[in-house]
Amino acid sequence: MDYVSGTRHNGGTLGSDPVVQQAAMENVIDAHRDDILGKRTYWMYQSRLDINYEGNVANVHGRESSLRIVKRIRDVMGMYSLLDSKEPGVPQGGTQEVNQRTRAGQNHAGGSTNIAKVILARRIGISRTQERAAPTPSTATSHGG
Image (tube, rainbow, N blue to C red; front, top):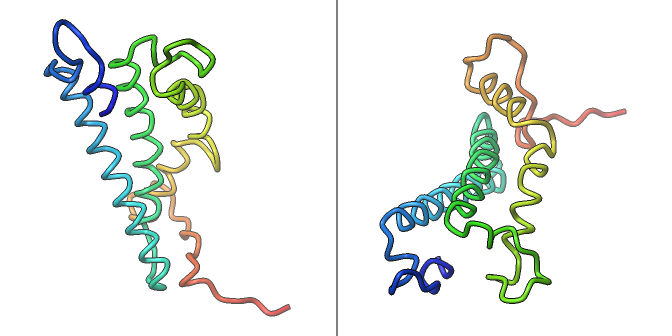
């Protein structure tokens, strides 16, 4: 938001372009939705509630929204989103370059997005397989040894 409101473009700001406004607001909405889903899961964990599918919804949404967000940033900032911190006049200190470079790889931490979708499908009961969902901390039992 700071970039689009502070960057001069065609006699105004970059944010005065309706297409840029739409992309910026879609990013804000995606980020807030991701935050709310994560907070819900954390609250459920802290409250010792059963977490059946909620964590997986947050996981899948976070993986997919992060890719949508960096694509929109690339669309709005163009090549400036790929400048590192050593370039003179780089916007936002080059943080977008790091974000662009690392986002796709981080989505594979703990398995691919497709695996996360399979796990989610199992948890909500629409999977083609009938495997039992992994226990959550509130439903796990201790096994004495």
